[in-house]
Image 1 (spheres, rainbow, N blue to C red):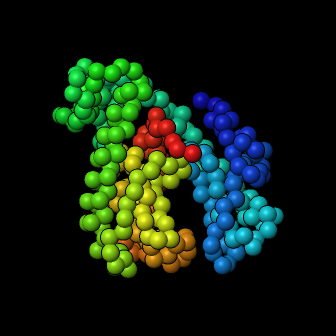
Image 2 (tube, rainbow, N blue to C red):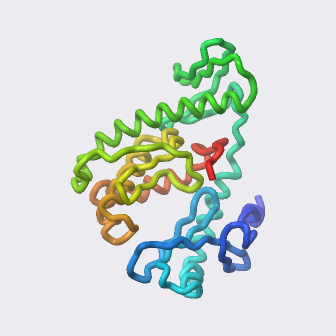
Image 3 (tube, rainbow, N blue to C red):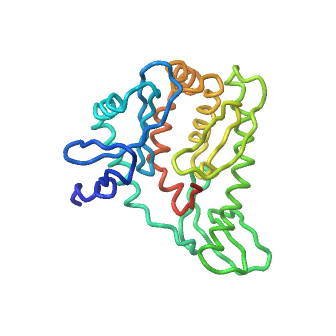
Length: 260
């Protein structure tokens, strides 16, 4: 396949962010996000949705932020290309019998049955949906509710297991679920943890990484040097786990309708 074809969806400079620069003749758009760092440190995030965010202090000029992004141009371009290639080979879900769906990193074949008693269950390698309703939206809605219930229970149980690693946390933080377009999780200033329910499709190790990531934010709100030291202390191989999670994002998020 001509690799140049794989970069076309993200070369529209002003559709993917507020700022734009060129890397090897390919325009890369990004959004500037204010960070709370007191130092002139720039952090760049490339999301599986092909969106690029550059986090920088408000005191930094636009020119300085743009130059910082340009210096990472090769890395940004390669990340975008890798994410798009992963997306390219994923067939959009139709929510029909025979499709593959994920739960805790394992693949399950979808089976749909006509039944008055609506329910979803895992049974011998199959993800079974029982319903009288027909159509893609109806099946997707039932599965969405099922994933929400599974995620809420599973995340609470894993948080209880992982909490002792975060000895800076004095009490169990509250959890909420929200489908997010560019994040697996987040942490508020008050210490409330928010997780994308579709993270429950990923393996346990990836879920643990996201939970530990947000627990570290309770101690260090920014992605500072101290934050990464905390991450290294609670999960030494978190970078490899993060890379695998990001590389498989489209498998886990395929067919999801995001809230804006």
